[in-house]
Length: 279
Image (cartoon, rainbow, N blue to C red; front, side, top):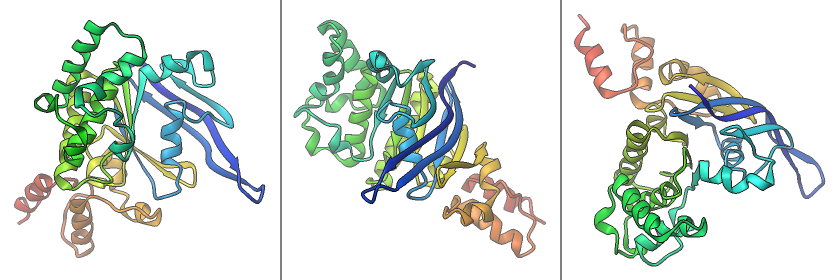
């Protein structure tokens, strides 16, 4: 598969008020293939949101290189090309909604790119259909639920026809129902549209649904692999200040009590299957 995002030995630091240098990213090497769904985990201050902003050229490296579909993010002449290829969805949808009507908000990005009106109409309708918000096309965004607002924000990014969407803790402010709506939307866009997904999250059950997980700690990649490979490292993850999916935690405790349960259980269905096979 072709490479969508590439962080090549990326360092990022800034000067604090006392003139001391604070290192946020410390030699990150990460490749994301086109069509992949990767989740990035890490406790607060680990650098995960900073890395996400590098993939959208909001930040550029102090040292090293970041490439988006082969484009160097330090190339200011291609900034719009980068952001058309890699769209960003933030934690608070209210910070991304700019219009008083849903369809106008989704049209905002394409309008700013100079897309012809007929094409804008097509993109708005297609994007709202993709996130299953067509019935709310004439609604006021501020009257929607949190999950619905976030889906409108995703539709606004989709209308710019990105190949990749980077989501920085998009469900952090949502209730369980809203989180489910957003994650199902993300999975469907990845599965049906082939859009590359980078999900920054602190919900382990969300990360477990990705193709691959990268765990950051102190600006470095501490663990990387498929969800079953990462989450079987329960003690290591806890030492990094992270939890594991509930069923993985249950399996870990059962094994400690001498019950023979596999160490890569992630879901309730897998747990039920394991328990049913016990003699």
